[in-house]
Image (cartoon, rainbow, N blue to C red; front, side):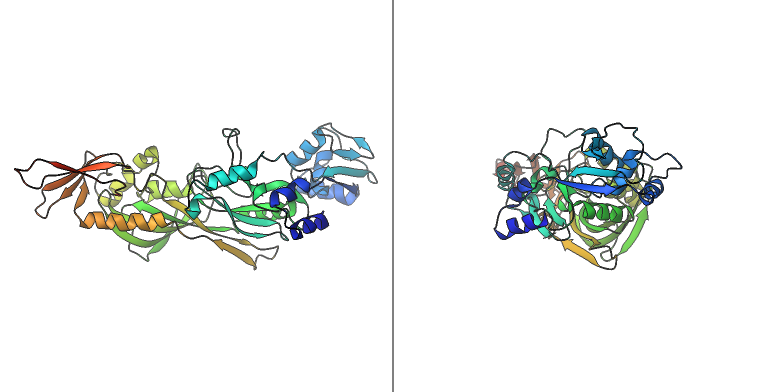
Amino acid sequence: MAGAIRSATETGVTPLEAWQALQGSQVSVMMTEELREKAKIAFQREEVVFLHHVVAVAFPALPTLNAARKALRQGRVLVDGVVKKQHDALAPVPGSILLAHLGAVDSILPQVEGLLQAWNSKSERPEARIYLIQSDPVAGWAVVNKPCGMHCKPCGFNTGLVTLEGYLPALVEPPLTGTHCRCPRVCHRLDFRVCGPVLVATAEETMRRLKASFEHRKVKKEYRAIVCGRVGEPGSHWSISAPVEGADATTEIQVLSVVRCPHFDFLSELKLIPVTGRHHQLRQHCALLLGAPIVNEERPLFRAAAEAWQRRTGSALPPYHVRGGGNLFLQAVGITFPGDDDDAVTTTVEVSVSSRFERLLRTSQRAFEEGWRSTRDGRTVQLSVDGKTVGVVWGGRKSCWVKLKIFRRMRPCYWPCFGLHL
């Protein structure tokens, strides 16, 4: 297999063509007492050891019980030349030959290269595109940028949608060594509304090693966020801990900058490092512990931050406001993971922070200095030096009109303010 992949790479074929060219292989293993004991220890069996326990230990390409059971159901495992599909088949006697048909590639999305090109043509912003950031075909891993508005992999409710994994065969080539995965596999999740680097495995051995690294918290991820309100002085850093969905969760926080804001009085740019990886951990910690929901957070979680906001500021939570197009101002910007079995050697992959972060901070500060403020009923008004209203923003976030009363005797005039970020 390795030789074929090297030849394909040297001749300049695309990653998609390299995956399509892969053929399945047959791997045989002799059953021994040592293999039986290894299966007993791995799955904590006392006496009875089933065939799927042995298969999961004997074949690196079938590392889990689910993968082993699936291979048995599909008839891809033979014992002394006989297909064994029974879920309760016992482990064979020592001296038996186990043969597994491995290396088949999952069905690839039709016209995936055209779909990838169509997605990337929607925007010129790097964080909104799917692209290969860095890869190591020998080690069998890659890092790919996931845009917001996309799931990492299929799950129960999005089986009809194209996820990041569906695009990967058009971006990431197969590994040069080891047992290739059935297709490139995402090693961790990244929220639907969050963009940033995602770690991908192309070799089964690398997949198992990276999953173990995540389980033992040897992988470090870094995020940028803009939150509503002021949570500390620039340069201050600390950690917070609170359960998320019943599991312990810890987040490290550093304040990078603070600017004034017409709607929330202040906006704070934060560096966030999740020590644990709970579902929506950063969003919940910012809203429920800091009392500073991320800008453009979903309304239920924004409203849930009211108590913590009141405790932190002594005032009521301001009305909900959409800023900068409505996308969540949370982005993954870096990931560090063990480069091999030696934990002392790590690989760090980083991406640039989206330009919309700097633009929001700049326009918020400017709008505040120009006198724009929000009222308790949700209107945005511009105040004069003496505190009187001289302008009111009407309408939605994409196009709005400013009504200026310059002199009492003059008729009101309306000025278009398209794309005004207030």
